[in-house]
Length: 194
Ligand code: IMP
Image (cartoon, rainbow, N blue to C red):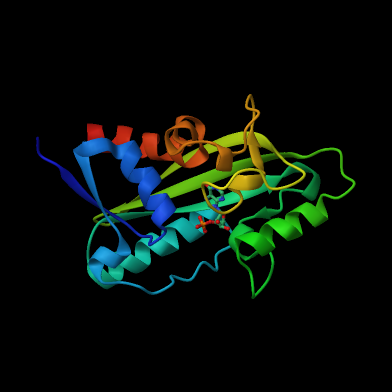
């Protein structure tokens, strides 16, 4: 079988693992590190589409290869869609996942509506064209962290229809329903017809 090589503009080991599992052995994923890039690509745009495209374009221009990038936001209903596109930077300049979650739980204190959704946008740059693929999953925010797997906001996100947070699920369970999995499936459908 001829394997297609795909550059994914990320060095996030969790995302790379999720995406390689979804793509199976028809595709081989190359990370930024495989290209020799260890820089943090700026994510300063006002939309998920803008950030995904900016990351893919950065790599396309610097390394001259077709590639795809993703950007994800957690949209919380009672916070008017926050943290949204600012999910990575929610806790400010010293942000990390623990601090982002702490801030989120604090903002939700006393609120009974804990409905939320994850949304992922993938931008694929092929030649001069940009294509977008989306995926989302509805759920709710737990009142405390649950589970040790996954990354980011996984310990506090309970997808609809489940009693477990994403951080209590195996990678393949998360990949059955997650926002990123849905966006990646749309990407793969496109690549398979390409
Ligand atoms: P980015 O797409 O890497 O910019 O992610 C934006 C923010 O969402 C970061 O804080 C990530 O840790 C978080 N994030 C992205 N994907 C997921 C996921 O699948 N589960 C939980 N948090 C995520």
